[in-house]
Image (cartoon, rainbow, N blue to C red; front, side, top):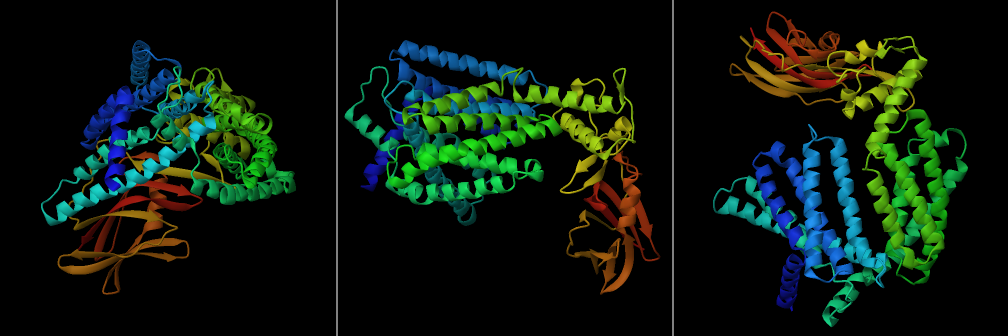
Length: 582
C-alpha cells in the first residue's frame, strides 16, 4: 500500500514535469541562481532570480491557456514563445532601473499574484468546471505541498546534521543547498502534480483523469466540517461584533481610528476567502452563511472605503492607501457578485481581481505614479499655503502650525523613502545627510504619535569620511547597544588578569556606566551627558564629533557613537566603549 502510494506520487511528479516543461526549465534556472546567491553573489543575480520566477509563472499560465482553448502542439509552442518574450521583456525592464527598489519588489509580487489567479481562473472560463472548484483544487494542493515539503526539509536537514555530528564535518552551506532543492524544485513539482487536468477544447478526459479531477475539486469531509461548524459560525459572530462596533461608534473620531481600516480590510479578505471555499457546500449552516455574509460585507466595505477616502483628504495618497482603496472597490464588487449572482458567475471575482492587479502596476495609473504625483502636490500645496515655496525653491520657516509641520514631515520623508526626491529639483536627495531636513524646512521632523506629537533626532558616524579612531593606550573595546527604556545585564571584563564588571545605573534622569571591581566603583561614565553632547551635532558625524572621553585617577573611558536616536528625550543606539586602566 505504502509503495503504491509512493509510486503514484513519483509518477505524478514526473507527469507534472512533462506537463509544464517551460516552468520546470525556469525552476532549474532558479535553483542554479540560488546556488550562486548562497555563495554570496546576491547583487549580480537578484534581478535574474525574479525574472525566472516570473518566467515560471508565465509558463504555468501558458500551459493552462493551451489546455483550455487549444489542442495542437504548434499552438503550445506559440504560447511558450510568448511567455519567453514577456520574461525577457521583464528582465530588460528591471535592469533599466539603477537600483532594485520597493516599487519593483511590490510590482513583481503583484504580477506573480495576478499570474497565479490567472492560472486558477483560466480552466473555469466558459467551462462546466467553476472557479470555486479550481480554487478548491489549488487550495488543497497548496496545503498538501506545505505539509510534505516541511516534513522532507526537516528530515533532510536532520540527516545532514547527523552526518555532521557523527561521521564527518559538513559545510554549513549544505543546509541552504538542501533547502534550495526542496523549496525550488520539489515543492513546485509536488504542487503541480496535485493540479488535475480539466476539460479543455477537445474535452476528452480519460476515466482516470476525470476521477483525479473529481477528487481534487471536492471539498474533503474534514475541511467541510471545519468550514460549516467552526469557520462560518465564527465568521458570522465576528461579523455581528464588527457591525455592532461600527453602528455604536459611527460618530466622533470613528473615521480617524487607525484600527478601523486594517480591521475592515482583514475582515473583507477573510469573508471573501470563506465564501469561495463554502460555495460548493449545501448543508444548512453553509447555506445560511452564503446568504448572510455577502449582504453584511457590502455595508462594511462601504465603511472601509469611506474611512480610506477621508484619510486621503488628510494625508494624501500613498501606495499603501492606493491598494487599500483598490481592494475596497474589489471587495465591494465581490460582495455584489456573491449577493445577487449565481455561483456560476464566481469567476467574475477572479477576473476583476486580475484586472485591478494589472491596473495597479501599469503607468500612469499605477499605485506608485499616482502616489508620487499626489504626495508631491500635497507637499507643494502645504508649502505654498505657508509662503515657503517661491520661484521653485523652498523657503525655511519654523513659524508654522504643528499640523502643517507634521504634514510636511510625513510627505517629504515618504518621497525620500521612495527615492522620489531624486526627481524633484527643489528637494535634497536625502534628508538624513547631516541636518538637511532642518536646513530645508527650518524645523526638525515632526511626527504624529498615539495622542501627541513629538520630534525625533538622529546622528550616525560617517564611515565614508576616512574615519580613524585612535585606540592607543586602551586595554579593551566593547560594542554596546544602549537604550534608555531597556535595562541590560552587567558585562564581565578581564583586564591585566583582574576581573571587572561594567553595568548601567540610573539615578533620576541621570544615566551612567559603572566600572566596578569586587563591587567597588572605579569609574562612573556619565552616559546621558555624553549622548547629549554627541547628538547636538546632528546628522552625519566625523570621529571627533562622535567621541566623548571621561576619566578619573584610575580609569579612562572613551565612547564613540556609531549611531544615536532620540525620541521624546529617550535615547537608543550603538556605541563603541574603550577602557584604559591607569
